[in-house]
Length: 316
Length: 125
Image (cartoon, rainbow over all chains, first blue to last red; front, side, top):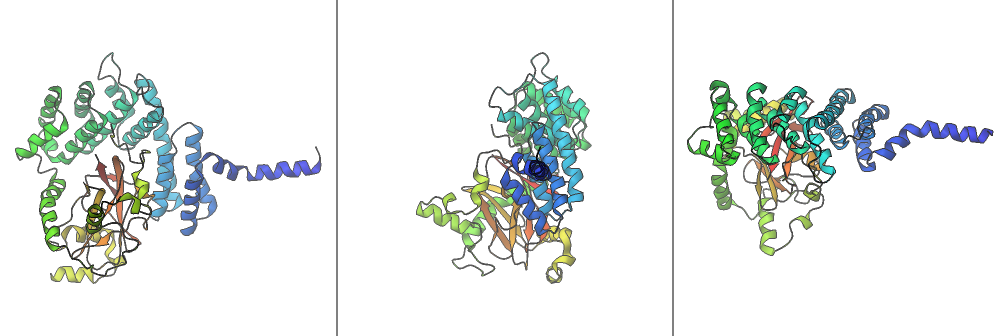
């Protein structure tokens, strides 16, 4: 080997870590994260260490998107790389456990596109990160007996279970309810809705242990969350736990009326209009002119894609 | 209204996130804070906060950028704006004056962010 070949080999090896990041992670995300880190005055090495977690995830065939997003969130919120490090490390661990438990416990994929398995892994990892244990997931997976659940069903069931537990219901009490929902063929958004509604009414379930049994019976009858909790709302139950949301709903109608009445032609002058997202007035103007709301946006379209940027959205 | 004037005359660093939260929840708007909700064209976010220069909604839908979606001043102390969001769950917070992160006073759900705060959750159905 000639001297210049050795020198060239050395140069390539020295650049390897940088090249490997750029090669395996989405360039835009890496660039955004580096810029965020630089703006916050963090040493490039510390940012590189964070990106290494995302790269590890990708190399293991795990979705790297939630890791990159969490790094951006942490940096944007002013968290130091040292603070972000354990958060993303745990996320990679949860993604790994999620994939494992999904493989062990389910009949396989959802029978749809492969990308859905990645979504199932992300949703399951979130459930594990929110306090659901692998044993609880395995119990949930057995809820249909011999007919095993698929990955997506189990992942959303686990997230529904996480929400239910956050409402103060024990795993032991919650698993039969979510398991029954899986048996009844609840869709992903219904599994999440069930958990969210129980969480909102946490106080009721903590003070009345029979309440969760009532919900289970309703689910056994094939009732869906909208029916179960709509009946609750009408009977006045569910108020104590869901106060904030309910208040918001109550205020909404009066808010709309009030805004229509008090809408002004001129603006208060606080801040400029140029960079502001559309207020209700502007939406009305666009609507009246028959224009396309989205086409007038500069950056708003980011959230409008269907690439699944939402978190475990129940978008059946 | 004395309490409100007194509070709003303080500087933001002194107020801190918690006070923002309380102010948002208790400010003297006749309607109070409202959870993000779907309307035609997207999800409407709003926050009631007196004496601030800018309010942005930030979340996983805009890469946590505090310049991507600024809310517009409405009547009184109300700031609001509409963001087109895809179906599913999205986490968000508000950023006031470009630097102060505020936990949403109203949201469909809340989730720990891992950094000692809570993100609001908005569900697009």
